[in-house]
Length: 236
Image (tube, rainbow, N blue to C red; front, side):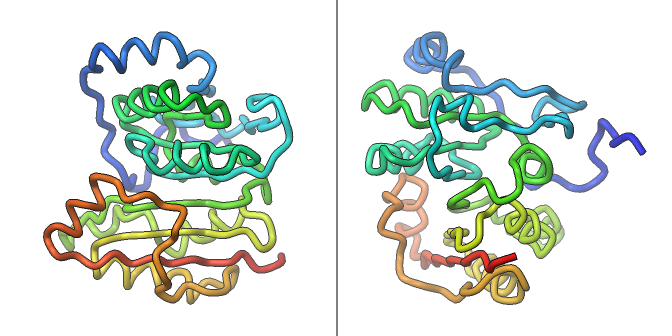
């Protein structure tokens, strides 16, 4: 059966556009052709053709462990990680185009080249675009909490998504998550601890490799507790 070109399940994001600043546009014009990867689509503008599989060696020009960040936003954590770990390759998946452009601004400022960006639906990327066992670390920092109860079905981290995370992670690979929304933290903990594919999952210490972003600072400013969870991919 041919896959439908339109989504039948709720998505965990709202596609957001917006104008680029002059600085963002200049960075986009200079860098997007190299660092923002185009993929074949299959319907909506953030979709991925299910026949497409990313060749990381081709797009990075080398073989190196791959770290994927879902919802990379303005790229603060992504670019800092790339600076700190030049031996790793980093792929940011983000649907907010000005955020992707701001990431390019920061990349240009610090001079990193081991980052690639894609404007795609993360669930589709993990279902077909990334090869099984191809990811060294999967990171999801502060996913949209969809705090209203009627919107909880839109939350990204679910048992179904855990199976996708397990599909792309190598044995022993890490699934790092963080949130400042308490009931979502409990959901994330339960998803990881109850998954047959992961060890760990209890709340742990703050991941030192995650710089404090403006978003995290706002949560701390209103008294929210930041929860970090790490799952370790079990051998298949």
